[in-house]
Length: 255
Image (cartoon, rainbow, N blue to C red; front, side):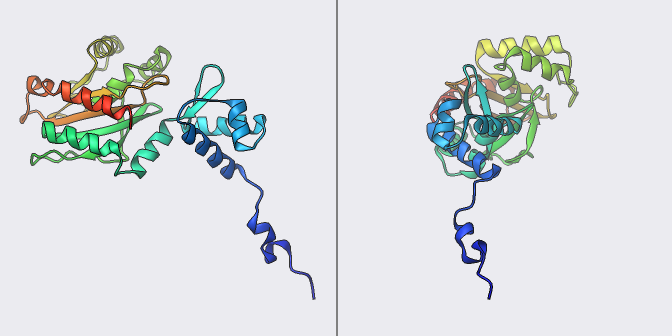
């Protein structure tokens, strides 16, 4: 009678050699536990893998936006990781901050993260009025014509802004900024005043107010917004919610 194989006896199955997926998950876990940016050598040590292996795993994760590279050979979690974490944890302090904002202004509020050249909605709380926005968690939105998108775009390195402009600025409504010079001027204004306005630029009859969430590492990855219909709230009244919006953005920085 033949001897049972290692797999049949459970020996191999109980301690499989770590594959590429397992290594990627270990790297992501190490970055999440640190909460900041980690040097390549230190990350490899924590994960129990060689530096070349860590570099290879990080390259794959960077290509998918799960990891972000910084100067000096440091790495941190990327926008895709933040988007996944936000959508998988609906009961976090993020939602509590958004609930306070929604209750203060009465309108629909969103939170989103930057993923490559668009925004991913991670949270949405409907307003107290009877109008329901078509946006949904997990959906994407362009950078050049949405409140959160423009707020994030205004804080990106110039090379990334140039790449977005070069890819084209499709017209979504008569109010969409489609000229690069006009959009650059708008981005400068956003940086100066600390918030962005989407005045029917992405969808007619929809007006949004947005701000980035302050980050300690690199450019902002997250943003928060207030959205309403134009015939319910005029521009000046919406701008009156800037203090509440900025307070929410600051509170999200610690979430």
